[in-house]
Image (cartoon, rainbow, N blue to C red):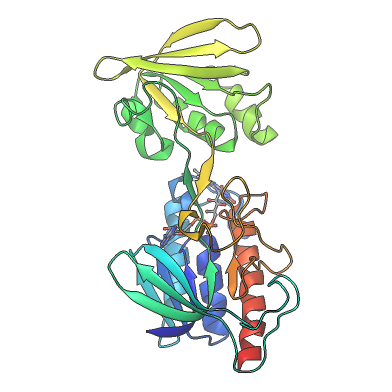
Length: 330
Ligand SMILES: Cc1cc2nc3c(=O)[nH]c(=O)nc-3n(C[C@H](O)[C@H](O)[C@H](O)COP(=O)(O)OP(=O)(O)OC[C@H]3O[C@@H](n4cnc5c(N)ncnc54)[C@H](O)[C@@H]3O)c2cc1C
C-alpha cells in the first residue's frame, strides 16, 4: 500500500500529527503499538492545558477518540503494530542537492520514497514520514536489579504501588517521575526513601515541597545505588553516600526505579542523524531531520523538554512543514 505520509507513534506527538494530517486531507497511515504514550502511567496529569486534572488513561482515551473521529479513507490507523524497519527506496533530488535542513532541491514530481516494515510482516510505502516514537524507561544497571525485576524491583509506580502496602520502599531517581512515584507510594508504604544520585533533586519545586513534607518520606542526595539483595524477593539495598564515601544497607521490600528514559530510535540508526543519547536531531523550527522527507517530534528527539504539550507542538510544526513539502511534489 502506498501513502503520502506515514506517521509512526500514537502518543501525544503522533496523534497531534495525525489529527492535523486528516484535516489537511493528506493520505496518511498512522502505525502505533499503543495509544496515549508514556503518561498513560500517570495517575494525575495537571498540566494538560485546558483540563485541570485527568489520569493518564483518560488522556490516552481522549487522544484515541480524537484521532478516530478523523479516521476515514484519508487517515488510516494501524494500532497494536510495531514498525521494525525503514528503508529509503528513493532520495529526494537524487542528483544531489543541499542537505534536508536547508532549502529543498525538490522539483515538481520529484521526491523521496520510503518503505516501512511492520512486525506482522507487512510493508507500506510513503513519500514522507513523521516519527513520533517517544521513549521507554531506563533500567537500573546494578547487581541484583535484573534478578529481582518483578520480585520487588519495579518500573511503574502507578501500576504497582498498591502491592506495597505496609512495606518499606526506596525510589531510585530524584526527578519529577521519582517524586511522583514516591508520592503515590506514601498512600500505601510504611516508609519511602528517595535516592538522588546528584547533589540536588531535579523535580519541580512545588512537587518537591509537597513530597518532602510527608513524614513517611526521607530524601537522600548524593546517594548511589550499588546492589539489590534478597532471597526470593528484594530485602535490602546497598548504597553509597558519595559525599562521605560511606556504604550502607537499607532494609526495603521494594525498589521503584525512575532514572529517566531511552528514546525508541534503534531502528533509525544509520538513517537519520542522532545525538549521543540516541535522540533524533531535528531542526527546532520545523521538526525536520537530517534526511529530506523525514520529520521527527516528541520525546524521541533532541528537544530538551520532555512534555506532552511540547511533543504535540513539535508534531504540529512537523506536519505543517510536511504539508508544504508535499504541495511542492504536486
Ligand atoms: C510517569 C510519567 C508521567 C508523566 N507526566 C507528565 C505530565 O503530567 N505532563 C506532561 O506534560 N508530561 C508528562 N510526562 C511526559 C510525557 O508523557 C511525554 O513527554 C510524552 O508522552 C511524549 O510524547 P511522545 O508522543 O513523544 O512519545 P510517547 O508518549 O512515548 O509515545 C510514543 C508512541 O510511539 C509508539 N511507538 C514507539 N515505537 C514504536 C514502533 N517501533 N512502532 C510503532 N509504534 C511505536 C508507542 O507505542 C507510543 O504510542 C510523563 C511521563 C511519564 C513517564
